[in-house]
Length: 135
Image 1 (tube, one colour):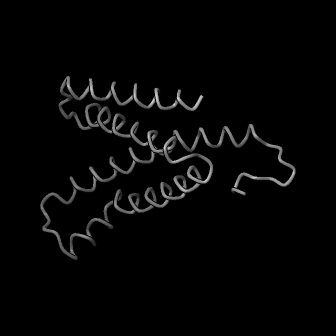
Image 2 (cartoon, rainbow, N blue to C red):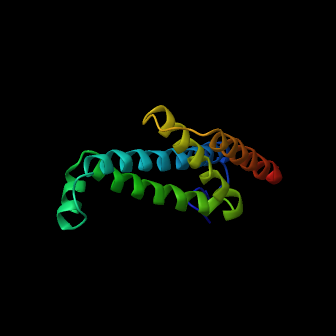
């Protein structure tokens, strides 16, 4: 029995919608975590690591967001794993790599090498192929 189970067995459409939302949400939460990390790191660029650094990180607007996003990611991941095989769920996280790469290019104006773009396409193709295997 999982968190989606009901005694009378009805409700597969809401379960499917929720799982799709969670599977798409996990890469987005990962992206949010990386963006929050980048902004926090940029604000702490001149501070040496230590207790003062930790206090400064938590006082940044993005610092506490890191903790919230991490907890939400853990909850979402546990829900997904309660319903889907690990071998089917884990490739979805790879989409986060592509999202982070594109966000770095668009938001932080980081250079995107053509090999990175090819790698991103390969990741997307791999996730698609693994997803088709289940069907």
